[in-house]
Image (cartoon, rainbow, N blue to C red; front, side, top):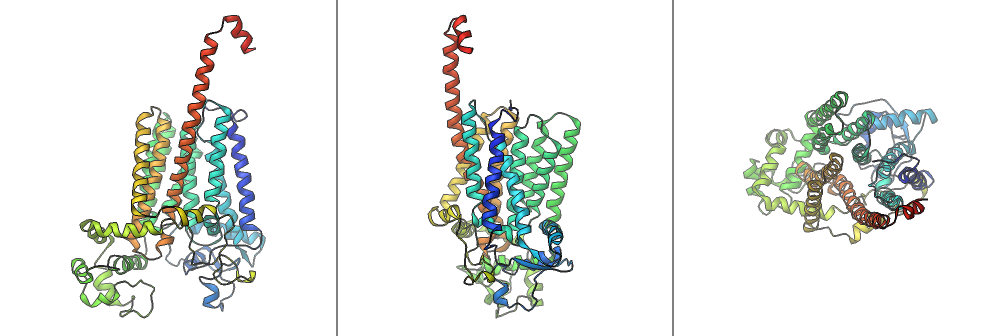
Amino acid sequence: MPLEPERDIRYGLSWLAVAAGAVLLVYLLMIPPVVGVADNGDFIRVMGAAGIAYPDPQESYADRYFGYAHREFGYGGYTSGGYVSTHVVLVAIAGWIGRLFNSRVFDIRVLGACYSILMLAAVGLLVRHAPATRSRVLTGLVAGLLGAALLIVFGDIGYAAYFQSFFGEPFALVGMLLAVACAVALARSRQPSAWLFAGFIAAAIAVATSKIQNAPLGFAFAVLAWRMLALRADRFWHRRVLAGTGVLLLASVLMIAIAPDKLRHINLYQTIFFGILKDSPDVSGDMRELGIPERYAGLAGTNFFQKDTVIPQNDPALREDVLEKLGHRDIALFYLRHPGRFADKLAKGADHGVALRPYYLGNYDKREGRERGDLIFAFSGWSEWKRTHMPHTLGWFTGFFAGYLAILALWWKRMRSRAARLVAETFAVVALAGLFSWMVPLVGDGEADIGKHLFMFNVCFDMMILSALIGVVHAAAYGIASRRTARRGKGERGMTGEARQVHHD
């Protein structure tokens, strides 16, 4: 049974982890030199919808894109830009907060602070509900290790620098952390609260609607939400859970259904010409199988934004002959007929799956006097270790995912409590989300900007690594605590009644 907060060591450790995380993020993000991630051309569709603009309309291309992050922005009108994402809502809220401090200049650190607060809320929840043992000290050891590991991994500058940018990646990151944290907290609470469930639904919606490629993750979270019906027996709870599950499903479906045609065409172009036909052993044969006229063979291996292609990507005939006739269903069926080709694409994804930051985008504002494209490496131990030492082969990732899911299945079968099973199911959803995030970009966008598109794969994989580590430590600590309790019980049973009384006194 859960301990009262004043007796539960995890309560104090959760606040300690939040405080340590706050110090770390302030040091990395708020104190000059202020860092972020440079724009690769994606910012404008979010900025326009959120009422934020670049302060200098005459800024050169080299200064605006790829090389330098920007600390200060201006304010502008609200334009839709055809971009659909709840990420825009958070950026708009940050913009409104920024106006309270400076009505003319938006400081990117305001957005960084919003992300930091959300991430620290997830860290606090996870540490507060870390797995317990029969020993207060050993429980504290597990919770403390979890808090430290969360900050080392998700406080890494590879993740944190994203907080001060208009990319959707940090929005998906904090949504994923909060969704898992709320699910674990609900499973381990004495009386799961409706507010905590609402937090789970909101976080899951944030993940599913952060970008189109993440929309399928909403269906996995919806199944997990439905499983939460068993946490309480009252009608009020059941109504809330069913309503929340329905809202989450609706948000995921709408995210896919209302995707702008232009964006669909871009993604489809990338999937065909920079995916299937890129490095194809038989370009003509693949084109015949897909029903693509031979005159477009010169586009094989090109991406949508590439200049000087033999046929312009916005050519109306290309749109009519290819992009409006084919769909992602046709791409999926092609890979089903050619599993070896899909395995080759997964191998390329695995090769990029250990880099959680875009190394081609600079981190410093130009005014800092750094070279164009310079990167920050402070507190980058985890991201650099992954990039230089972790295996990045198809076999490694396939084996890890298979082993992880197999162990979760055995754990689920062994557990009898619904709460414990819900925790196992939560991390199974994390693993499934990781698999989706590995496969969906390759089917939905080819090899275009593959490193950044595998960001959510990195998030899920890192969560799997941490949960596996904490699971091993908890199992060892629980075993030690149980043996100590058993020995103490045997010793007390061997005492006389008078000696046992003295012992307790």
